[in-house]
Image (cartoon, rainbow, N blue to C red):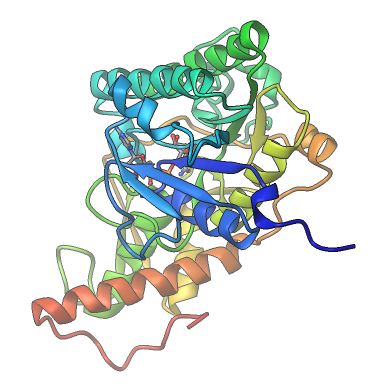
Length: 358
Ligand code: NAD
């Protein structure tokens, strides 16, 4: 049978295409042969986009959302992957509540309505494990969270409340307008080409960066020299599960194509402590490292993903082992740091081993 022409595939939009997961998703969709429009307020930071069209737009503004979802040469954008968000790791989302709630409500309500008005058929909203109530996450050894646990609602931060509100919006757009909405709840996504410094980075990238500093300069980040050390916020016994970005984009695509209209967890279900995560990063760097516990936001005490429904509806689940994913991420972050230090003219320890996967 002849292969259908490329145009047989619907045109798709990825918002947040200048960000971490959005950039990887554009690559994934291009590999599958889609025509992709990417939208963001910034270009991807670490590698050029492969999107067929990339629009720099502030999606808090209604007119920009109409432009972002507008037809291409008369053909509507049929699938919208909505990833744009004002977000970051614990250090960011535990601090800027008003800004996060304000900006994300505007981005999401405007993007969904504009997609609907412009004739989109499917719309995937990227929610978060941060929707789950604080009262179910008070112990490090927590029971994994299943989708129905989100209510009665009591998310920890404004970020989680906004995600819940937009989940509701997606539900009602499907019920009232027939827009085929899909809602994914990510559990801690990490990987190469993600923010690794500056305050918005998440725990895996922060651990890799701090480890790389300790390896290349000795001591710890900000205080070089001596045996390698790493600062860890709190006692480091808080637990999480972590998913590599390659698994993430695969799951996102499978969910978009599925019939599952209810919110779905997407994460790994292997829980580790932040101390263990630090050791995995040190192992990837090929060094031993001393943990220094300092004050800092820790988020909920424990969190894990219950993947029962994920396995059931997608007949698939993430597979990349944390050790393998962190080895890849560490190697990339060490490379970034080496380039930064070289540009500053800072000499590094050259008698250290290369990272595990390099
Ligand atoms: P990211 O910060 O790398 O990407 C988000 C992108 O949105 C950024 O490039 C940013 O510039 C863009 N953006 C912000 N404000 C905008 C605006 N006004 N107009 C247009 N673009 C704007 O984050 P990510 O990790 O790639 O996350 C993607 C989605 O997944 C987000 O919705 C996030 O809340 C969700 N999520 C991510 C994780 C994770 O672990 N990374 C976990 C749970 C949920």
